[in-house]
Image (cartoon, rainbow, N blue to C red; front, top):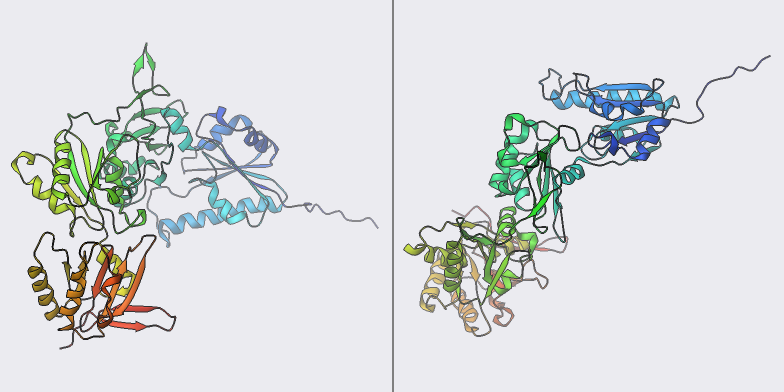
Length: 527
């Protein structure tokens, strides 16, 4: 009796995600060529028109005996009657495509999925990888990404020193794009095409449009480089990106020709880092929140990144990262009017000036001082903008719960700019109105008695067990939160970095089962 032989594979096939680079076949890596040569199956994606850029790039290495799997998307930007909509149709396609590749792998055939750019950066291959890599031995072959190719085409550094790079898809909502572009140093925005209008608007809102460059089909024969602001939206293909290169490097691409030859590859010229003095200057007053970078809004980060000059109290300016080309002007905390006038005088010379405040600039801070001077006739032509920040009161309240959940009053205890009689009158009026109180500037090294006077005044109106929150250096390295009763408020633990929150008659202090104590003021008021 003759044994019957079976043709079962000795092992499943191996899956390869093969990066091909950005279009120029000469940028294929040796490993990519090696993998394509040794596999049994070559797979690639395309739209319904059937033309695959990936196959074109690798065509010289695809043999007649290769099995080709052409994975055709059912739709790209079209509408669909699929019950799951666009996402449902695409998910069904990926599932079916993965099943086709799995059949080859189960039969012992090695499969290479060709990917433009890098296989794990916004690629079609990654959808196969997610569905198959846990089932089969897998190797990802990295490649020159469109990011690297576009920056190389520009011929300028993308990031230098401590600069932060942000990679964004152009499909994000315009507001989200603007916020992220404003808050980063360098950026690339992929997936342009029909999103170009939104990306351009986002760059303009972020104040970065003049710094942005457009790169189309990097490394391909049709490569084009231009200032993004000058690009016709109707002539933008999908294979293009927006680039905000390094500011530290102080270089910019030079577009033009010399002796008839294009200069849109790597020739560069230095950029002047100082303001010209002829452009329209401006003053932006920003709030940096109560502490470090975690409290900055993207809008404020953007203003700080694009400023020529930073002006402010020494402690607050030192919170702002230093940037090459920026000039920092530090001053004492008691010269607000002089600081405002200095900032406006710089702006009148064409400088982009940012005046920094802690917390919110409009709450006992620099916005009022700047606007007061800006309303003088000599500065009438200087634009002034105020960007909000997280207030100390809101930051402190969040640390303990919601003591500001109902009506509240904000009062500064400093009598440097207004007499104590006015302060006492306002405290009494707010307390009698049963408002929660947020007390700013309670004490300093020279001014100590006001906290004791505050406690005595409130004890005439509020119950002794009224919750009081003492929040010092919120968000900073020496943060300390105390919750005490009004009757036990100790003025000696209060300084200029402390914010005091005094509850109303309705404010609750609750020790929860987990060991934490919360303070909150109900939104309902008893009839």
